[in-house]
Length: 489
Ligand code: BGC
Image (cartoon, rainbow, N blue to C red; front, side):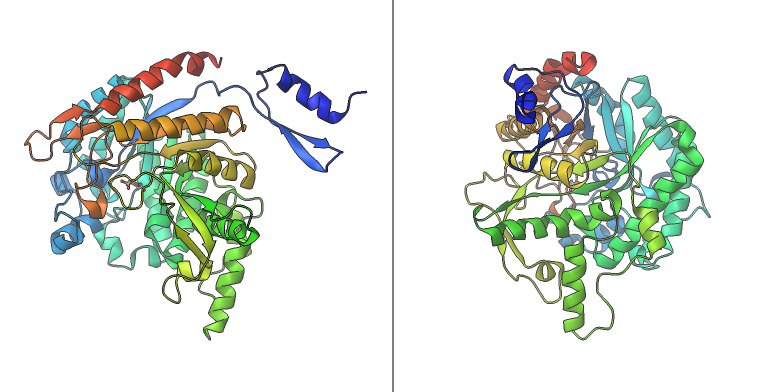
């Protein structure tokens, strides 16, 4: 009888490409599990593009919309934004959404991920007052998408908290979990029959501290469980978009560096992913140990990393239908105590930095590292038991360039590494989303960093849209792949 190794390797040597199930095979000779990888791209793979309400809509006070924290901040503290700009009008997508949808369709995308502005539909964040014109705007947008054959993916919260809720403590106040549930309930009730893809919250890591993050995890779980109890018959899929860089050891043969990479991943992605996607739930053990110990050393009689009750751990664990990943760049890691004491980076004991050889973008935090994408997809695949992964953001920034070869290079590199993760490593990636279809208001960077496939002239009254070279690139890429997407071969 042939050895297990030969049985396993023979089909690969023959170039056998049809397996669609990942299986683990024990190779008795060297005590490792060899993995027979999935060899065909998933049928039905989805190409999407994305925006967020505050970044594109404008119409900041139209038709009964309440104020959100970004409206308030840009008006009271314009110096907070690099070019002292704001999102009052932004791309004016509130009025021009039909033009946006035409562009999205023309570029060949099958899905559009956008977010709902909480205070546009609930001016004070609560269901005490429902703003029907706000709901009508999203209803029109969704109807237009569907009539153009574009599937909507809706994010409930992309950073624009109603001011009234912020005044109550925002994500620090645990009653926000109830308010978020009420908001989700309203949106699921109104749009559940038309929208099948939902993201509860965008990138908790980018915006929140440990205590806010604790309530965010609970709010996400509440919305997920509400959907599964009350709206399951619509058959939608839900997740939370988590952002992560990939981590490379400073010296890959140095065990300390390899361990610091792992700590970095657990502190960054594991912080929110472990409670939801891991087998046992709760925060990653390494965060628990380091933060508990540091808190005790600081003389506190509680840990700075809050505890979930056993019931909460169970309520949060497993609240996903797929893994939604936002990814842009990478870091090098080595041991090091950086940052103020106490702080997230100090607790982590990692010095994370950019490799000087990585090409830049217009954003200081975004260096071009395509191989990091493959590494990260594999990390998630291994760490969380081979989940379905939908990439809900990936993109590149420049400034006012129409012939955007930098973006084309970025997309080429990252898409090719994603293909390797699918073809060669067996990661179950079922969708990929370009951030963003349009240049838009890039938070604190204002309009000084542009992520669009389509240029927007923010000086012009009509917010004129002009396709960049990358728009043609992505259209060709999607077209070239459309055969295998529809047939699976
Ligand atoms: C956010 C977007 C942002 C993009 C580029 C993502 O982290 O979700 O809102 O514009 O990164 O910075």
